Length: 142
Image (cartoon, rainbow, N blue to C red; front, side):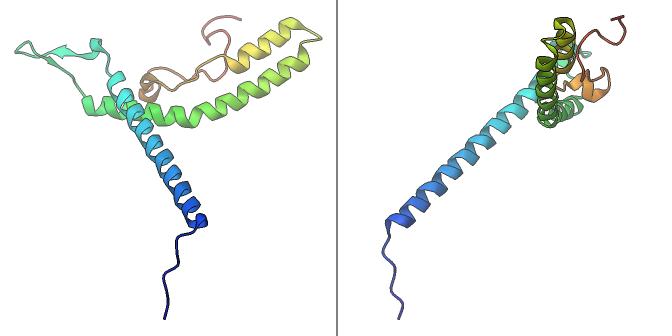
């Protein structure tokens, strides 16, 4: 006949660790939900609203705008780590170049850490390009 094991310190510690993990997961879910909410509502500028026949404001393509906002958030979550790694490597190369030429070191740092750090809804729509490398915009001479 099996008897119930008394609760020991070990199981209490395991239970406490599981509760901490579940709190962290819940907090991460809340942050993600807030980010999606803000992206969805921030994706629709006031200038995009038009007046309909009765004079009330309407928002054309609201679902599309929400989709662009969600795509912007997801794209940024994927893009930022790569951009950060590129900036970090560029910064290291800039430090190596600094003793020889401060101008070149500055150009390397500007090129690697400049540019876009977030993916905007306009980029997702295709209205704007992603500027991965900083410096002068592509239409201007360097």
